[in-house]
Length: 321
Image 1: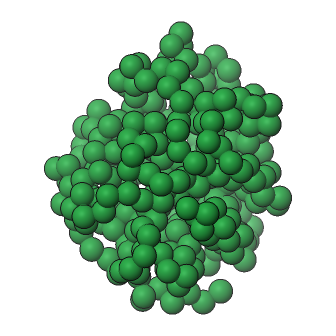
Image 2: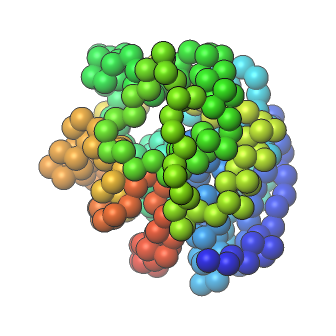
Image 3: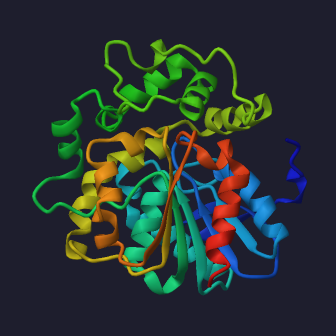
């Protein structure tokens, strides 16, 4: 699929004490803000930026703090959801944008849930992908909970150890890490024993048709420059987020929401997630949840794997408002 990527404009915005890189297209119309996850970049939204701008939306996709061409502060505690939201609010303010439609995926989905929880008046509606809203459990910290349920080798637990996982990624090589993450279709919770690490994972025998060598090269060029620490620090702030968000325990998300997840996505198969989505748990915490879409045959990086479907789902939902 040939994409007219030169239509997308790139700029730097000064916000919340950092310089943030944004990709944008379209000058008129309602604004859609796209938030990427790990190990990702603004680039994962390339299809949606081009399509939705062609039907009248102004589309903005930043590299989040720590990623791509955006600054990466060295201190781990600079990656809480409050820092990330501070960056995004500052970005919107500097562009003179009051309210946006929001689209999130993976960590971008987590940030989006918090955005709607903490500042619902800035969001018209949300399309969130892959990661469900997790209500804060006042009895147990986030990482502790994962350790209990999924063990020490669960990737989020492994990501806590500073330096060790960066070394492991470096030994594997950036191209292998990016390709492995983007193309993984295992529905088991990702558990990587320390002894073998990511360096021992086999590279996929072929790249799927929805991903090109040019795509992988783009990711590799950015991660070779920046490293993975910025993105990993989001995971390392999970327990700090848990502490800081205590005052919002039990608060509902009062924004219209459409939630999309691939049926081959490991996040959909984590213990209890399916039941939470389908038995009313998600709706209880997100009362304005209007649609749940289980995308058949799609794994985690669904906006790249099934770009036309995801673009159509976003458009269909936002057109209602």
